[in-house]
Image (cartoon, rainbow, N blue to C red; front, side, top):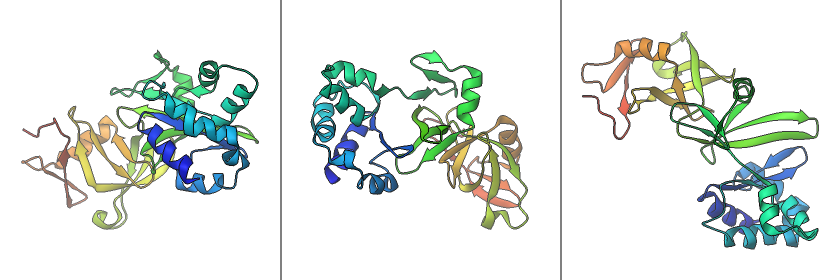
Length: 246
């Protein structure tokens, strides 16, 4: 399993990820919990599957197209006489791309609003890889999953709850655009080059405050623009590289 993980790590540096279907879910050997489950899978021990992962995919770097590859069906296709180029193309899933304006694209085409809404409702975050993804149930035996290539987080803070206790100790509880609630780390507040307000959350990585919340929270910004007062408590306000508080 260590060889598979190390190779997956090398591929990931080139924007290439591996998915193995295990029971009803797709698993990635780079995610510790997934790797533990995959270690018990017969697919990982299959000689031809290992050849795909350890030899055929790395040999095509750095020219291997970015995306998510499924080694098991690739190995099966090769055994049936399908060419390697065709097998790789057939079992590669292109990632959804989110640009700096938070517009969603797939294969250089905009994602339809109703599809984006559905995917947004199923957004999640892979902390081990610092990647956003969506996952949803197609049927009891199949959960589809796709990683996202994001110039900015796709997670937006829609509303925040007034804390019942000291905000310095409990932070803020937020409702996000995927319908989930999460805790915000106010020690990580920052403004990007376009003066958009972000912070880290407990379970979803970076989150972006909606414009109305940004305006509301920044009413308490200090004169030197290095901190902001929220709930009577002062928190640091960082600026991204390339941005300037002046």
